[in-house]
Length: 216
Image 1 (tube, helix red, strand yellow):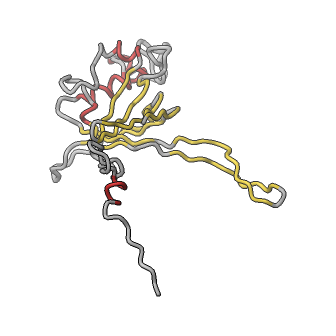
Image 2 (spheres, helix red, strand yellow):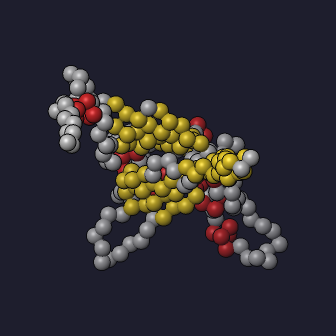
Image 3 (cartoon, one colour):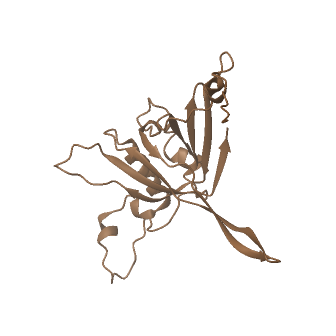
């Protein structure tokens, strides 16, 4: 004779965290849209931008609330397979932090554009204001004009513009967060303009970073 096992009708309460008065529904999946990004400038970048308040929604230079999408950390744990007296053994050889993609709305207040121009100016001499002579100097001129510099020339010995970018995932008065430590922009795509489209303007930023810090 087959046996039928009956479970308690209250098992769902225990599984989803409703078995205690006032308890949050702790075991349901997170909603993707319940997050916030926070940008922390280095002291040199903050001074350069004159305390821009990137995370204050009332600031004209705020970008934290313009974030549409951001990647969570993606790590690659490189390994090799060894022979340990004919027993397979897996050994880690390297940890790779994969690139993170950040998508923001390109708003009419130019907040993201302002941050990007400052970022570009912070690291590269190409973006700094130059005279017409700097741009139009001939290749055979007897002297080389280098008034504001070209190429990679950080304005500070601190070669970080952002010290960290923190992502908070919210739920019921709680949060879990992770930080990209010392992130640097490796590509930026302002997309295109198109008379046939009514899509919203976005900018896609790709980041590399040196470490990840978790908080739960």
